[in-house]
Image (cartoon, rainbow, N blue to C red; front, top):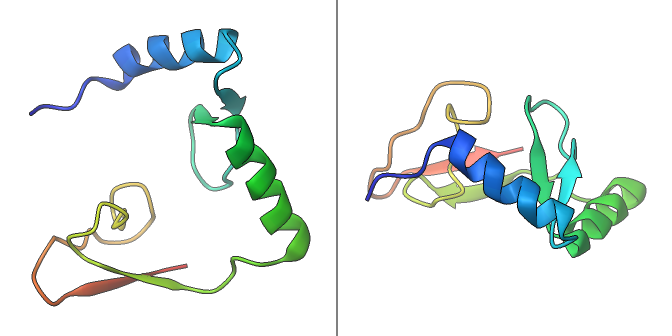
Length: 89
């Protein structure tokens, strides 16, 4: 399956924002472009920022969808391979 183009998703996200179902803004520093989140995610992000939590690295398998190294996160891309992990953070 081919993922939809960002311009098509943006129309949907802006419509959801207008209905109050998602929030638009800049929630995570270091990333360019519009960002969207559920309203409860915005509060959770604020709590993490206030508490200073969330500064530890997280390790995920390279095949995990959270492996955004080289895709969204800076640095080289880490391809999905068995028994390979990626430390994020």
